[in-house]
Length: 278
Image (cartoon, rainbow, N blue to C red; front, side, top):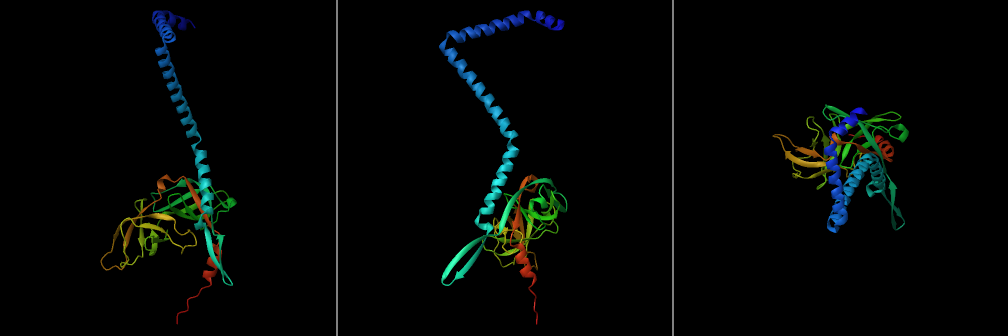
């Protein structure tokens, strides 16, 4: 307290000068309409900026909850889209009746671990068997494909990323429907290769690559990426196609786990097929 009084005493003239300046400013503002209006406008602007800053901080604090809610809404929307239904044409006497049966449903998950620089990359999600997650379910994001569920515990699951040496996704060129296998050959997490496309097939830079209907894991038409380069090596019958992936694996936060409701039925039927070579 003594030090405070000493400080005030030492600076008494300066503080008195500041107090008089403030009082003079107050008198000028109070007795002049123009200065009064200017001061009022300035104070309103300062208050508005301050409130804008406070609102920005509040929005940032709630951004996590907003993103989670948005992801949940997107999952519900995807589950109601046309692509999530199986089209079944039923012929009844002379009437064609098309019945839409749900084939895919989507639910959200958060990425809690992720790697992109290894030869075999995996993700860990915060959803498990309690939420209905099973191995071999597809995982996608708003930009494109992510991977396939591998191991599942009650509360978590691991996902084999597209950036994995054993990953092979059935993919096609959207423009002409020619299909092949999308694989990742290591290196950059931004690029993969589309294989098994015959050299006679026209391939153009910028062609869109999407998933096919041949997979019982991924729905058809999910974005994969765009062609950035294509060449045919000497003596080869196939294109070597470079695809820039639409998914930015280094920024993944919220994803969608996709459940193919009819997968077991399809696989059970296909497992009964036998090749008869005579």
